[in-house]
Image (cartoon, rainbow, N blue to C red; front, side, top):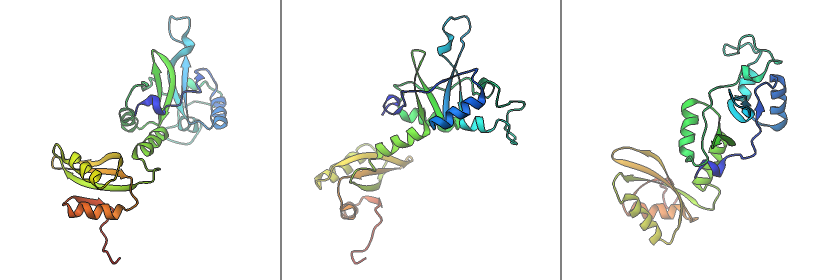
Length: 219
């Protein structure tokens, strides 16, 4: 899945000279937590389209607040460029979502403007990443969650999938939760309502099934 599959395309961007109080009001009206900021590019005649910063609802809340991180001497009537973050970390529409999610996590930020050929074409947020994770996991499908620990060697996952296919079950998604030099934990969504039955079959075939938990036949 790529950034272009989950980004918001109709971006609400603001100008760098917009008063902070107006930005705050617009943010509340639009229910938006991040605004890309456009401003003048030096020595050009069309600088209004240049991305110069980004501002979040947290940046605005700190204005005038009694907080160690509050910007000193900034008032609500001042232009938003006084509290914007610049330079801006960005994404490209063809970036894999996991790479952008890594950037969000490493830099502890909530959004990335999406740029293509120097133009602002979208924005992607942490909420978009969570929605993508839910979609990729297949959690909304009528399926059973299966977690299996496999040896970390070529063919181990293929063998598991072949065994599940022999039981006439289809696997709709595969993800990993942990790996080391010896083992890998795979989480699968399998199109069956009898998850415990499938888990019992796999345990009998010497697979290490972590979920669903083993239960007695009389429980």
